Image (cartoon, rainbow, N blue to C red; front, side, top):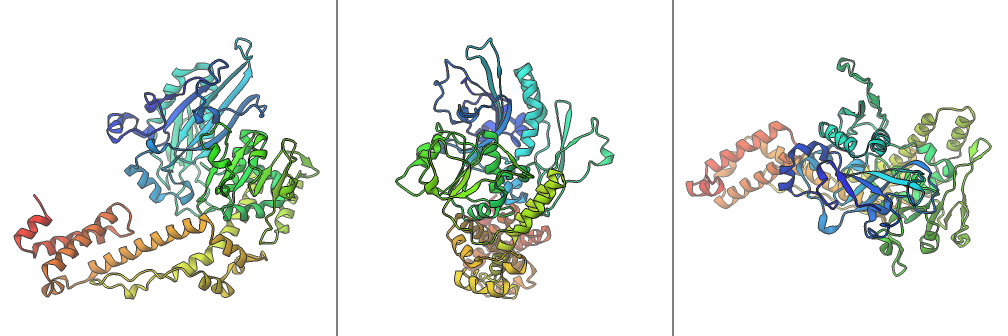
Length: 568
């Protein structure tokens, strides 16, 4: 493999670590590029230099391994952990984007996504007999559809014209507006305008982007991407349609799962499709759409001295079947084949049936699903195939089913969590706000009898057992922490509003000591800083009133204390 080269603002960097704030300031012309990409990498396979970069995970992840016969052009993706010493600093633009983005589409502080366009064609001028090169976009945004579309435009041109083309593209991207949740953006590149909607947490799950605005009169007419991130679920799940609910349960419970596929494209798409099953719930476990034996975390994931980690691992090398035989769930998929009108389905098999290199396609697990299979869904999908309905219609049906399943599971948790919030009438201006009551699992389970998922879902089964297992999973921990954080912020915001709406602050101060008054100033300032940093959901008028209160209170204090609280 050739040395890793970055195009655009990161060209001078020799690693994937983010630039320091000083470096970012110096590289201000590339700030817009950096809002989308960390860097662009070109990776070339060279027979003689092949082992020179064996420690660079990104190099190996940019090529299909020798077991994948990928001739022509192939696209796939991977996800890697940042080195601890090169962790990207968190910037204001990251916080602004994440505050408006859905949980599942937020920028990741500790991982990079790699989007790969790989070309392998016969070339007699090369010693190995093949031209093998990958163009890789590295980003912290999980916009797989957008970056695949971008690579489809850039990579073929780059393979013909090389570096000058790449420099021009990076310069164009540096003119793009930053990704702002809720906005529809026009992104020009190589004579094409990509029109995309950046998802927002206030979008409805069934949201479809608007048609291009007529008043813009864009020339050429924009290419509209229906989504920046959603895959064709029906195509991805073709071989496992009969087991979609079992796989949904395994994802919900954060179970370790290996996906063994014939190619990085199938591996990465299956893994990304699986983790998207839980939307709008954030997937809180680790996942690797494509993983190789050369990865720096290979030993960590394959050790038998401890339980398998909560990871969904996409691989193509059959060697992993032997190495990961102790993992509880292994999904092996083959090339798509039709069995009548329905794509040939993998069978559910016991882990003891797992052989080594000649293992047949199947879902190897001892797990028994808690919920009964939705036979009506499978019939509708089969009927759609027979009537040759468009695949996007089939995908919409499947996505809606999974969304409703996840919502039916989460809504009772949301309702119970909301009941733990103190009543607004108990939040008074001059007292510490009451605490959020603790989450008691037994109380929640008892509430399911009259407010459970049966109100919104027709599926029968052991819902109680599924919730009990969910309580032990990383997803419950992630969901609870996020909801508790949001509720605590709401409580702080309500308390700030109660203080600002109080009409008698001067009367309150009359019988208070200077220590108590100073304490009020400090607390109000702290809430104000949180609110201005978008960490508290309060109105602008409330912020202005809070600032006025602070000035009023400070003005009532002796001059020496005023000097301390408001230094010149």
